[in-house]
Image (tube, rainbow, N blue to C red; front, side, top):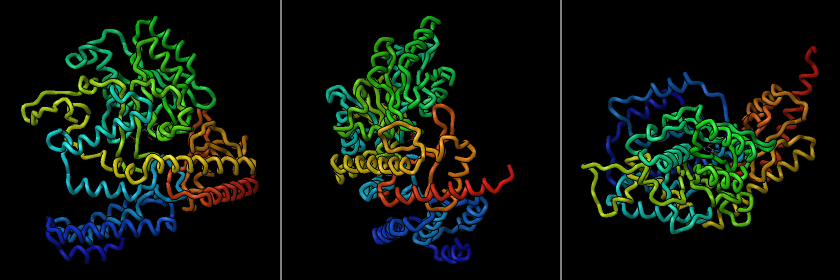
Length: 492
Ligand SMILES: Cc1ncc(COP(=O)(O)O)c(C=O)c1O
């Protein structure tokens, strides 16, 4: 943004706390105008660009903070900064990392939440909001096949917090004196099992819980990136005979890199045999597990002790909206409850969110899920999921028809591919950089379970249409041809 424009804007100083209805409406309307303008212009924007940290800093330094500025000019300033200073994950040609275009219902919910600002630490401060979240948790848990009479859960900021919550709950169940003694309540070293494809938030959670990254056993995967159940069995046997205790198996239903789904039924059986907690990280892929005729891909998910699911991924709810669901009522309290003199003691103490989760003061996360579900209905979400799977099928078929190699094997809408089976990691990386450089699409690179680098394209924006998929194929093909002709011109 032009600094002189900003300086002139901030010269018109507004009221520091515009709480009156007129100022609030005009501020909210200018924010909505900016959102509408962004939405209208989105398709024409470069999906990503080079960001210059120094110039962003210089623009921020130009804001006059002492006297305060009028809100509308600040909103215009911020909107300009966001338009020019971010990768546009909502863009129809952003084939990115599970960050969707948000919907009007989700945006409206976030506005309502900011305005009403209910405090979800305590039931008695926000009974409507707390009850709505409890009701939603039950609806989602039932979609995954949990029993309505025993299921439980909590909203989280996202998948990382949900995975962390699962680990704490698993510890609280495994170690009777965990609340008082922590890890000292268990004499044997604990083990947690996943694969190279498990989301790294589990490793962070292990560190935060004082278990250390070495607790994590990376079990072999098959070529598709799914956990090898026999290798898991062998490793557990080996660990047990060495005096270790299996704490938790972390299965993934839709891995971040390749969309693999672990063999959930087999892993649930192994967890039951060795007494470990069975957690399924379905942060992204779980959306498809809730579609009745796609549930077969996720058979066994209903046997999990807990599930991570992120409405802010495939369901297009604004960040951050995650949830941890469990089949065991009462364990969240065992893990998180604490007595205080300063929190209100209402009759529904056991349902106070601060006593059932990692967070304390908390925003009303569930409203954006409720309004999004209310507006789309399960059927609306199901048809969006089917349509995005259809777009990925189209992309797969087009690439294969043109001789490209699709290397991952998943029914979910994420593709990992290379132009030629013999292409090198460096060539693939250069190709992705060349495509992103055009600003017409955004792709990422990924390391496949076997180690080689591939192009990763995920259908993640609800704005993506079949023409965007076709355009992507043309774009990658052109970039590859240019690269090959450039390589041909180089001295060998
Ligand atoms: C499988 C999986 N689990 C967990 C996470 C972490 O979720 P969040 O970024 O919402 O914390 C991700 C993020 O992409 C993921 O793909």
